[in-house]
Amino acid sequence: MSQKSSLVAIDWKTVPLPSINYNGQRLADAANARLAFKLKPGGIELHPDLKVLIHHLLAEVAAIPSSLGRRKVLLSDAIFGNLFVEQFPPNPKLKSMYWKAILTCVWDWEDKNELVHKGSPYFFMAESFLQSGDIPSAYTCIFSAIEEDKRSSPRIPKSFKASPAYMTASLVENSDNRLHDVVVLPLRAYIENLLNGYNSRSKSKLTMKMLDTKLLQADELEDVKRFFVANFHEAYHLTPINSTRLINNDYSKLKIIDTLFNFGLIVDQILTYRFLGKTASDRRNMAKGFYQFALHRGWTSVMRDKDPGAFLKRLKPRLNDDTPEKVLPDLLDRKGTIDGKALDPQMNAVAAAYHLRNYAGHHLEGSNILVKRYNETFMLVVDALFAAIETL
Image (cartoon, rainbow, N blue to C red; front, side, top):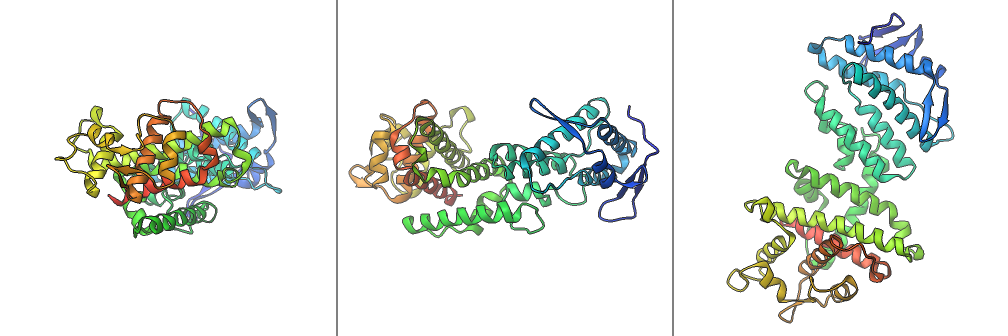
């Protein structure tokens, strides 16, 4: 077990976090004095003196009785907050490697001692990945921070839903979040712009407030919500590229169908939650969800179509029988029909999402139309998503 060090002095009278001195210096100054590292393949290696400092600090956390769990969390937050480094000029790549090295040191210590609360370093690492444009890695860290906050929730001063990580992943409008201005506000504006387009095309009245209630703040759809936000952020991040001729290549065709598959999967899961709750999990599929959506909107009846297969056969284009090259043109040009009758905008959009979700789930093949008409296709699939959310 790690032993406490006489070099560490903690003042618990300061709020909201305790202040820490190390060897007679403010912790931030002591850490900066040891902030030397060397580059190695895959990252950086901290100076041995900084590792010793971190181990001494973590030993102080371990020394606090488990009955004082809140103090353990507060001290952990204070430690990692003092290890935060601002660089001028900013170097987000180096910062993410720095936090990875800090966390590696902490994980090694935990393996021999006990778990400590690591919500802050995961969040700081997410921020550095966002600054370097690595959206998937950023959300990996954000969701790790949320898991830390959930694990520590009985002991933290406030609900884990008030943590910056959770508010970011839920797009909560709260300026106390470090990422509010750089993530939450731009993403909400981006989604609201898409929502306004959907409302115009479908004559709907879905609002951001309704989206908050139905999805972003719905505990029962937590996993769907996280996937929704992460994928919207990546789509937002790639918009400057995906809106240009830069995507006229074979890789982009594959990447775009992967993106559209993810959004189709979200539509699938929302329809499943809304309509297939009583269906055995191994018997759920998007065809059944689409069929129930059509029943909900009055486009068919159980007397007319006794099962999803009968319903799908009446649709044109044939969603299961061809590639996006042949299916999407009619849907993009609003020529989708059922028994010769034009589909309404919501049905047309969900038909497109159904086709792309199933096609991409079974084919690693790009399509020219996804590049040539990317913006239209993306908006159509997003319309399907909003149409599904409206049913909640």
